[in-house]
Amino acid sequence: MQQIARSVALAFNNLPRPHRVMLGSLTVLTLAVAVWRPYIYHPVSTPIVKTIELEKSDVRSLLPEASEPIDQAAQEEEAIPQDELDDKTEAEVGVHEYVVSTGDTLSSVLNQYGIEMGDISQLAASDKELRNLKIGQQLSWTLTDAGDLQRLTWEMSRRETRTYDRTENGFKMTSELQQGDWVNSAMKGTLGGGSFVASARDAGLTSGEISSVIKAMQWQMDFRKLKKGDAWSVLMSREMLDGKREQSQLVGVRLRSDGKDYYAIRAEDGKFYDRNGTGLAKGFLRFPTSKQFRVSSNFNPRRLNPVTGRVAPHRGVDFAMPQGTPVLAVGDGEVVMAKRSGAAGYYVAVRHGRTYTTRYMHLRKLLVKPGQKVKRGDRIALSGNTGRSTGPHLHYEVWINQLAVNPLTAKLPRTEGLTGKDRSDYLAQVKEVIPQLGLD
Ligand SMILES: [Zn+2]
Image 1 (cartoon, rainbow, N blue to C red):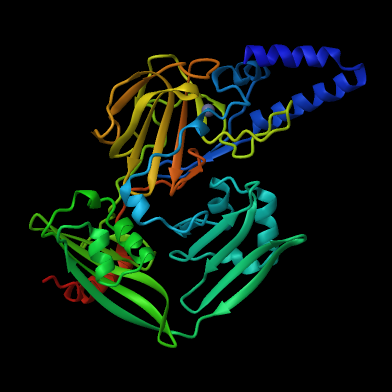
Image 2 (image 1 turned 90 degrees about the horizontal axis):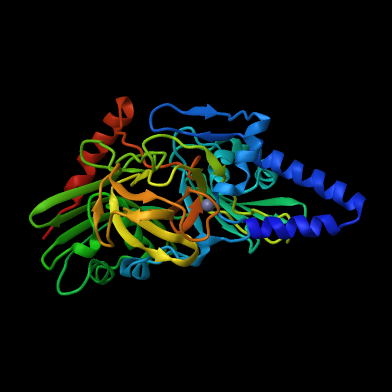
């Protein structure tokens, strides 16, 4: 950073005076925007909107001194670790999916993925109904090479799907009405020598359906650990049009492993619960440390280097903290990476279920090994200043389905179950579904 700062200063001093003034005020403006941008985060219990007010004297300490050099996307050098199950169940490349849940709005959903407010308001302008997202509906989208929104698909109901495509002037909406019939199909199998994926394919499940089963069970079962003789049964709702399968939705799954039964059944909200209506995912910590530290650099998938004009995405958030601060796993999971690696320095990656991965970089000391299981709150490392770093800090990333999201605003799993009428509706449904999940 010092080197870069020096060369910037040098280049700056060589500019003619009017340019200097302009560039100087531009830099101040950029800094002001970067520094004063308020951020919102949602702790596990009650949502709090937090705005950080800064004294002028703080601005200095917020310069990227405790961060990565701005042009070094340190985190890009390491891919998110995948395993053999990912290879076998790979979803469509580049398509991001999201199920609407409590409190979501179009902008809160898309914003956590770094989609710009300009695109979001253009979308909303193309269809006012987008303001009325309902719990359980599915959104999916693709991005342009530059990371802007290309297309958004909104599955409003089983009958209607709306698609919004980027055009030169805003987004163009098209609506598609489904005419097919939805029928339930029950399928089951027993693992022979092969994997669950092989067994499910033999029983007639598509790749997408297999992937939805694995995701529904992700908090209870590691499908890579299933053994010969383990049995499964699924109930799939499929839309048939002219005898052809158009789309499908997982209703429920039962898995018997080592003589024990595990269930995941879909509720109206699009999430999966156990037989008693209890949520399956354990809550995550919002911060990977026991106290909250100052944010020295925010998540920004389009961060521009003010000098080169190059996009150098910042896929995580930097917290300035003293070296040796204990770094905590934010959720239960398995360590998939713990090593020293160039720009990232000493770093750890933890996989939580099949959907989430978190990464922790520039550490001083690793306290875990690859393959190790960790619990939420476990110490996994001590923070440091290793790799390409310009001051003691922790670079922290959250990935959802292979896409980096803003750790301060991302919707993370919460421990919660169904209550009231939602729960009684659910339990009535469980009573219908379970008899259809027979095993051999
Ligand atoms: Zn960083």
